[in-house]
Amino acid sequence: MKSKKKIAVIGANQPLLSFFKRAVAYEAYEYHVFSWEEGAVCRAYAHKFYPISFKEKDRILDICKEINIDGITSFSLESALPTVNYIAQKLGLQGNSHECGILMDNKYTMRNALLDNNVAVPRFKSVSSADEVSIDFNCPLIIKPIDSGGSRGVTLVYDKNELANAIAIAIKFSQKNEVLVEEFIDGKEYSVEYLTDKSKHYFIAITEKETTQPPYFVELAHHQPALLDVLILSKVKQTVEKTLSVLKVAASPSHTEIKINSKGEIFVIETCSRLGGDFITSDLVYYSTGIDMVKAALDLCTNNYTYQPPVFNKFSGIFFLSLENKRILNVFDHLQQHSEIVYAEKNENELKNVTESNERSGCLIYQSEKKMTY
Image 1 (spheres, rainbow, N blue to C red):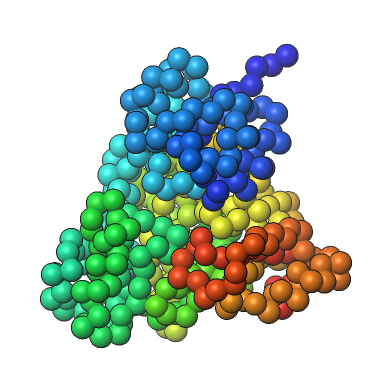
Image 2: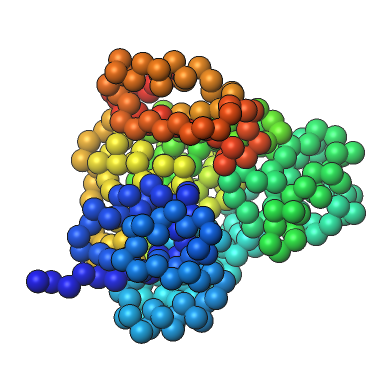
C-alpha cells in the first residue's frame, strides 16, 4: 500500500474548519497540525496534533524534520505564512522564497513594491501612533492595521479630526504596532483567486463582494463568477498576474483584493500567498467551477500540482447572517423550498450589526444557474 504524504498544517482555529473538512477526504495525505490548543476546533481532523504556537518556528521545524514532512501549508491563515515559508525553505520543500516573504511581510512593504512597479494602488502612508495625524491625503480615508485581517480594526474616516481615534483603534489589532492610512477608492470590491506553480500563474476565479456600509466594511456576501465585461476581466488578470510576479510569488495559492472604480480603473488593495477565506476557496470555487482549490493547494506544496481547467460554469455564492442580512432568515425557515442551498449554518449568536467578521451569526451557500439575491 502506498504511504500517505505528510502535510504540516499551521493553524487549527475556526476559520480553517471548511478547509479541513474538505482535506480529510483526500486519502493521499495525512495532517500534522500545529496550533495553540485553545480554540483549536480543527484538531479532530489531525493525524497528530501538536499544541505549539506558530511563532515557535524552530521547534516546529525540528518536529517536521523528525516526521519527514512532504509539504507545509496554513490554508488561509495569513499570520502563519512566515512560519510556513521558513520551514519550506529550511527543508527544501515547495514554497515561496524569503524575498517573497519580505515583500509580502505587511501591507506597507507590499504597497511600496507595487507602486515601484507601476501597479495602481491607493495613496498610502504608514504611521505608528495616533500622534502622527498630519496626513496630506484627501478624505475619506481608510485606516487599517498593517498586518491584520478579518476587517478587524478597519474604519473609514470622513474628517481628519477622526484620524487620531481611528489610528488608536487600528493599532490595537497590529502585532507590529503600525497602521496603514490610505485614500478611499470608490467602487466595487472583488477578490481574485490564483494558483501559482513554478512562477506560472493560473487564474481560477473572481468573486464579487458585498460589504456593510462604512465605517467597517464587513463582508456580507460573495458571488462567483463576478459579472465583468470581458475587457475589464482581461485587465484584471493582467494586473493581478503582474502583482504576483512583482511580489515574487512562485509556488502557492493567492488571494488578491481589488477595486474597480467608475472609470474602469483597477486598484490593488492587497494580496496574500494563501487560500481565500470566508468559504471562497474551500467551497464557492468548487461549486462554480468544479475546481478543488484545497486539493490543489496540497498538491502544490508537495510539488505534485497539474493545472486542471474548470469542469463546469455555474453560479455560487454565500450570504452571511447578521442584522444587515436578516432577510435571509426566511430562507433558513424554508430550506426545503430552496434546492439551490448546498450548505446552511446558524449559530446561537444574537443578530447584530457587525463590526468584524467573527460577529456574523451563520451563512447560506448556494449553487445555481444564476446569481441569487434573496
